[in-house]
Length: 240
Image 1 (spheres, rainbow, N blue to C red):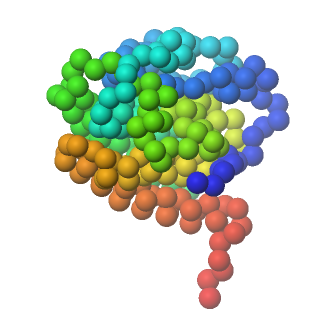
Image 2: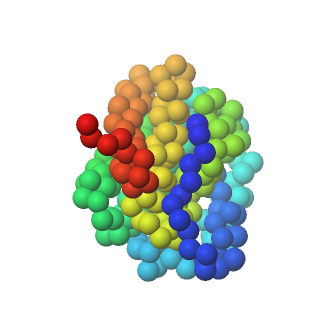
């Protein structure tokens, strides 16, 4: 996957703020742990709420969980990756909605919130049913279970799965429409890559069905986002 830039970022963003962003890697949580951590340190609900921070309980908890869990089934790794992954794009869409100018992006943000919230509920129900006592799958174990994941990509897998990081990156950008587009494209591509792995490796057919839905919906959204990106960057092909 190609490197993706994130709009134009203001040069006056504090160094501590940028350092906090770089430090913010999200490792996998069990759903209950993830929700508890988010309650302790809520993701900003608007760009006005964003401020520099040295660390957060959620980030500290994530780092503490780094060695938790042993290598489990692919299905568990996929679920534990997709839940926080979906939560982070919902956080971005909620913060972005009042900031976006293009009505197509506003509509897309609403669709992301609705669709991915439903998928989170479905994935959490699967986890409760299939793996009620399983430890969280660590990021290292996710990388082993999900062969398509690329930790060398920019933004990284950990950054895109971190609700605070993705919201801060959006709010720091001058062009909010372009930032939303350029954060959402690699975020969606990550979900597609993991879901393509699921088509081959998942044991539970219910999870295969979810993966198929993710691929279809998010590829369609990427296609639209790339059209808008071309318009915003002046690279659109003129109509004949």
